[in-house]
Amino acid sequence: MVEEFAFDTTEERRKVRQNGTGWIEVIAGSMFSGKSEELIRRLNRARIARQKVQVFKPRIDARYSKEEIASHSGQTHGSMPVATTAEMMAQILDDTQVVGIDEGQFFDMAIVDAVNELAESGKRVIIAGLDQDYTGRPFEPMPQLLSVAEFITKTHAICVKCGSTANYSQRTVESDARVEVGASDKYEARCRKCFIPHADSPTLHE
Ligand code: ADP
Ligand code: ZN
Image (tube, rainbow, N blue to C red; front, side, top):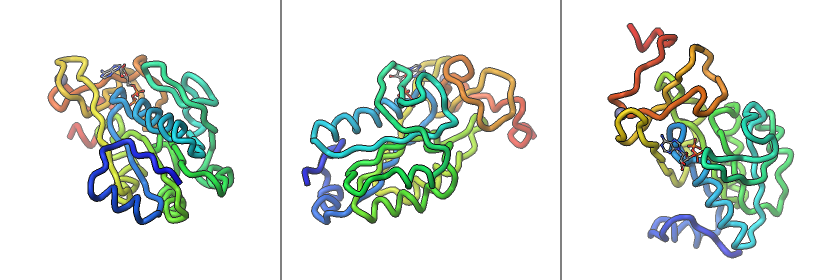
């Protein structure tokens, strides 16, 4: 099997490759930080390497296109929307080599065991997601996924207020729902200094 890595072949990564097992890569960061772009880049490279790729996204995220994952810069990649981890697992074919998952934060907690199982069965799993919600709290199941991943990439956006490195997704509309699907109409990237915890976030305002 031809292996395709998105990164430089460091010693650790070379060892994983030689071992012939699967592994988990997590791409985590704020909104607009380039998670989807990075996921799409890795998936495209896997396809160029003629690997069998399957891509999933949670059905909750109906932005842009139902059958595609999409970046804010307009890049897209075909994907299968699924409502649950169980639905995703039921779709995965034995000969699939690479499993891509976008919007990991919208999956149920069963995703953690599922990606471990996929990696143990020899597949490369690449999962992108928001590591913090709009209040700055860790967004489950991303912390758990970061814990079990062999490789982690943290992506950053640019703060729209001051141009610094942004690590937060500032909600710009009134809503205290943890899941409020939107893009630049509802969120903007902010750095630590410019991020203001949302008015609906009581614990951060005590
Ligand atoms: P994510 O999946 O992390 O939300 P995307 O991959 O969808 O990010 O989009 C990243 C793209 O968003 C960037 O390449 C850039 O074109 C655009 N963009 C818009 N606003 C910003 C910002 N504040 N900082 C960085 N990129 C931004
Ligand atoms: Zn700032």
